Image 1: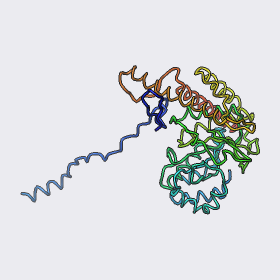
Image 2: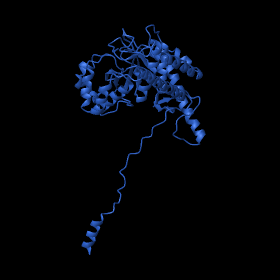
Image 3: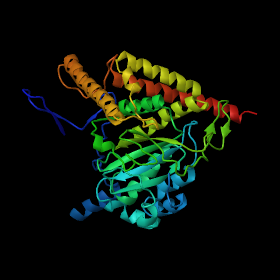
Image 4: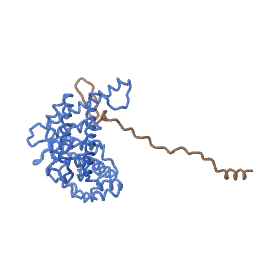
Length: 55
Length: 340
C-alpha cells in the first residue's frame, strides 16, 4: 500500500495492485458436495424374510 | 540467456513430482503455435529462495546454475533462467510443473518477479508499445517504484540497462532454432536474426500476461523483421497509437521505455514519469468504471467494464481482435500446407 499525500489534504491509501475492471473475474465453482443418499427399497425376498422372523 | 543444464535434465527432475504435466510439456515444448514467437522465462526470487533449493541442487547446484548469470533483479536472492519454449502454452505448462515441484505458486506470487523474454530486439517505439500493451492488458493493474525495476545491470559497463520495464538482452547465448513464419507463410527452421531479445520485467505475473506479451511481441517483431504477421503487426501498431492519441497518451511513446546505447542522463526518470502517467490513468479509469457501475445500478455489481471509451476495455478488445485474427489466419495457412 502506498500513501499519496499533499499538505493540507487527507492522506489517501493507494493499493499497489488492483484487478483490471475490464477483465471479468472468474468466480470459482462451488466445491462439489457429495449427493444425498437415495433410499432404495429393499428387495422383496428380504422384506418377506424379515417379516417372517418378526412374526 | 544462459542456463547451464539441459532441458531434458529439467524435465526428468520435474517428472518426479509432476508426471502428467511434464509428459505433456516434454512432448511439445518446442512446438510452435499459430506462428507466434517462442517464450523465455526468468524467475527472480525476492525471498530467500528456499523453495527452489531442491530444484537447483537437482540441476547441478547454485554454483553451476545460478552463479553463471550476473543478471538479476537487484533485490532478488536468485534468478533462475529457464530454457526457452516454443509457445506461451508450453511456458505456462513449464511454470505449472515448477509450481508442483516446489509446492508453491510461481504465478501471482508477490515474492516472485517474472521476466518474460521474446526473441528479436524491438525498436524504441515498438518497445514502448509492448510495455504499454502489457500494462493495460494485464489482469492486474500495478503501481511501481523504481526499486521494482532495478537490476544488477542497471549501470553495467558493457550492457547498461537502466531502470526500465523493457530490457534488451546482454548479447549472451541465443537459441534461434524455433519455427519462424516468413512473409509468404513458409515455416523456416530458425529466426531471421542470429541474436537479440526484448524482455519485460513484469513482476508477479499471470497466465494472461504470458499470453498477451507473446501475442503483442509477435505482432511487433514480425512487423519489424518482415515476418508473416507483418501486415497484422502494422495494423496493430496503428490501432494502438489511435487509442493512445484518443486518450491523450500518445506522448508516452516518446519516452525511453528501453535503454538505447545513445541514452542520455535522466532517461531513467523520463521513462518512470511516463510509466507513472500510464499507471495513474489506468487507476483513474478503474475508479471511473466503478463510479459508472454505481450510477448504473445504484449499487456495486461484480460485472465487467462496459465503457465505450475506457482505455482498459479498448485494450482488451484490441488484444481479442488480433488473437482471433491470428488463430483464424493460421488455420488457413495450415490448411494450405496440407492441401496437395
